[in-house]
Image (cartoon, rainbow over all chains, first blue to last red; front, side, top):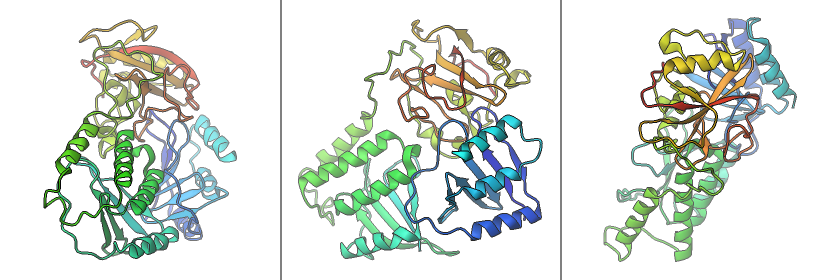
Length: 110
Length: 303
């Protein structure tokens, strides 16, 4: 099964999205499985205007990766250094608009 | 094992539900067990409007959820307040401020009145029960968060009411954007300015977006202070992140503005969490260019 990645960044336009190939999907699952459970109850996901995180669709499952947290249907994991978000950004195809890449990269550098 | 907590609150909307992860679940389970709230067989709470209690279930891994506890409203305020606090942190503004105010004030009232034991109480028609139901009705009819202090006057007779509930419920939540919300039309098409009229949108400049909106029926204007009578529309505002995206706000009857960022819930605060008294001065994140105020009409055709 191949995963689909959605960068949750736009308000008016449809969010950009792309497909991970089989190898990338396996790598995503490997990285996800390696994350520790969050040690506190997190607040709500980031909302508002601008970069809000990535949504990874894996069949019927949806994984939200944002703000150093990785939320699946039944658990929350920590990604303190936001390495999973950086890795997802790196999987974006060259067609991803430079303004979008720059905005996400800037948000991840904070 | 994570816990699934449901606030029994709404009538038409699905009740708010959130998960407490493994790391916190044991503490909550211990609390409700020590309070004698777990694994009881209770009759259903009486049907009434407003906060009715909390249901806690264990999330089965790959299996069905299993009931852990039902706490009827006012029965154990300490546990209820703790769980409502978790709910607020988890759900935030996905649930309207009106609903949070209602739950909080209800629990405070129970706390003031002292310990409450509800088993069989309503069925016996204890004095005061009917009055409490009427209070629930009053709270529901008169949202306490409609605080117009600091909001500018709304002078448009057709202005929509800030009522994010229907917008923040699937499938409306995922299929409608800021343009749908500003026009107060849930087309479920993630509407684009001008698309209903064959216009191809780009986002390099305000002049690329505004003509599409005009084709749909909106009209540009210079302010939001000119009175608009019935049938004369309401004020909206267009902003732009050049080369990136556009965004819309609308002015509600309370006078402050609200918006729906993309697929995310409608909200009445800006990126700094402040009420929006004027989109021109609000924290708009990357949408740095204020384009113009416009007037939207019920007759606009968007897609």
